[in-house]
Length: 76
Image 1: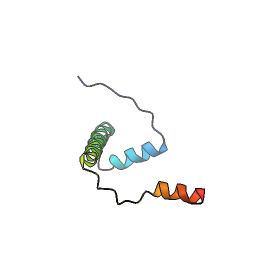
Image 2: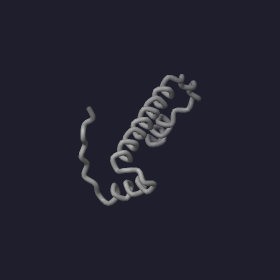
Image 3: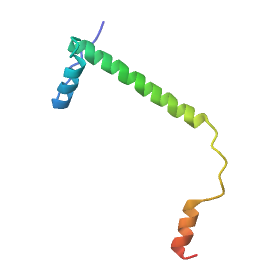
Image 4: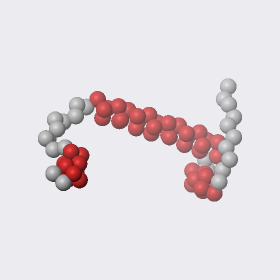
């Protein structure tokens, strides 16, 4: 059995709903679809982050900017 969810809208949300329902889609279906699409985007982003973190980092090029800046601040 499906749960009922109540949301409070503001002007921006009402505009978004107007856009999403301009083709005749009812508000409930538009909201349901938007939630599902947002979840897919978030899952995709999480997977992209994980894939990026699995890649080996390239070898350092021998330049440590933090050390260079610290030396310059010390006057060396």
